[in-house]
Length: 252
Image: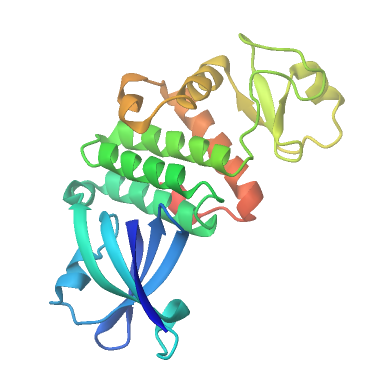
């Protein structure tokens, strides 16, 4: 039995396999993560089209009678809708794109809402393509925060998880074990709040607003350096908890 299936896909990774082939990992709107073999050398059109961060329509061929890698699938055609060459023109863009791709890979495509996950990923990369150095960090933070929402682990950050008191204008502390924030009084009484992360109101307000934004609107919402550092520490800590590791691509 053989069949060809069409997907809306984003290339997350492309690795060489053997002397002339490569193995691609795709995020698709229809089935989440898919892996396939690309046949042909460095001059192959498909090899060029399946570079990381390209997205468009792909044709995946499966034949149970042939020993194709990754579930007997091969990439047979790719109509690229977005090349995103600008991502490779700035170090910070490249690093942010790599962090986004690795986050998607290690979290298995963000659960079952693949259409929304795909939209968030491609829209973030579209905005990232022309971003300056500072905006690259904000876009990554926004993506990680929204991605935590897809995984169902985005913590509430405006109300103390212990006493329930809402704190809009005073600092709170995020505790990994509770996956929530504590006020100063509850933090002092807590026996499990190891290495809590300080979150000032500016950081929390930005994240609360960003959680409702599409990536293309992130450039309008500025954040000071202190809040940026707090927000990045929080989002990576939240995702580290579910992935059980700190991705090296987050640290730039």
